[in-house]
Length: 164
Figure 1 (cartoon, rainbow, N blue to C red):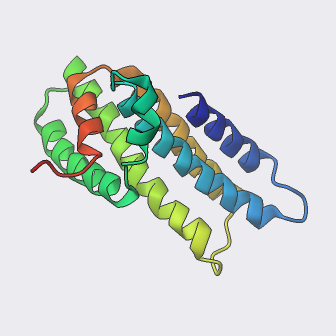
Figure 2: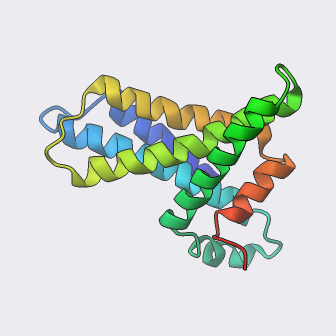
């Protein structure tokens, strides 16, 4: 997780202190780095469950952006229904809301990362970039609050792709 934390710190720094003369490059890199921070956080969390530490790096290479986005989209949709049915102020509802926040942030940040990396016609504002970095920061906090919940662990498995 240290790598993910470092990436989040870098995204925050780039968003707050864009390089003079390279503001757009700095802002774009902040958005991209915020996404990769969350991407690596989730992979790190999934691979830490693997009993053999020497294979965790190899397992981490199995994760794919598209599959992770699909799993996050499916989870977000399912949680929308579950949250609507859950009683207000219950601990279970709070955990589901936190998990939904992580999945939604992953989806949004992946989209914004693609925009930052490939849509050169778009001009990023410091305010928009700060929102994206804040989304990643909140996703980190939400994840840490629920990381050991059964639903959170099931999400990590789902990030590998559909089960047969």
